[in-house]
Image 1: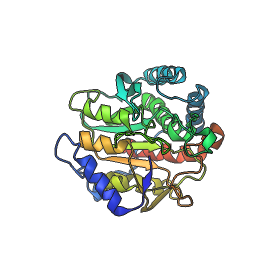
Image 2: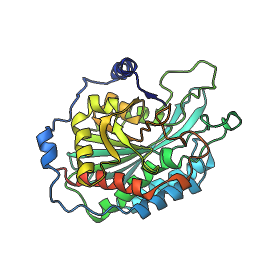
Image 3: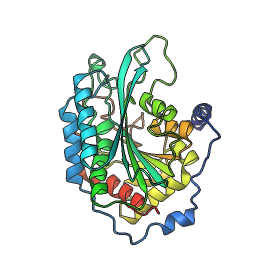
Length: 336
């Protein structure tokens, strides 16, 4: 996974993923900017508990690196499914054998929790729950060591588990689907010299896009959380999100500003990235916004702990979890 700052490269990648679509691409969510603004109303939105979200991040990292085919991965998958069930969701488990870039067969598991499953008006919330098998942005001697993925993986899942807990206590007017995608972070490392496919990242969302948990699944829009736990994180407009889910994206950033989180949600263009939201849109035609930390101070665009052994719980900040979680909750509770 990498950020692309070159617009021509980003456009070419966007056109390439569009060819994967199983139908014509719908580039908007049929919601006007005026409607989006009006929806930020006086509806009573539950208070997002950052301590709770942090505890869910800690619970995941306590299993160890959640690399597919590992015992930690299997145990954490059971934990996540049971948590969603505990919080009142109708739980779907998608088990799949997915081929990694080097031919390794990954025993993958997408975990889905549906709220108000019979409601046609739906919003998708998603994050990946696996962790990177390689610390390939660390010193070379650590390249083959798996990472904890506290920020890259567990932070987004932790936020969504806290939202799930709140959904059980106070149901919104619409249906919500929480999807934990697997095998997002098993993409080709730079040190690998063999032949490999170009789409080696986001294997779980590619599978779900082709075979969703319910036939012909549709949602009004989706929100992907990726790396949402670092201190003083900044979330810029991601290129693909702007191109395919602009109305939903602007709604989220305006909501964050109205809540006092404008220092986190920066209304400026950032990079573009191949992430799960690409396949949510290209296969299911669901506009999907990637809320992902974009760091302007690094050459990669990622936070310095990205794909290193330093991606640990001590670098997770409750204030960032709060900003993201409260913003997302305010958006979904104002949907009608």
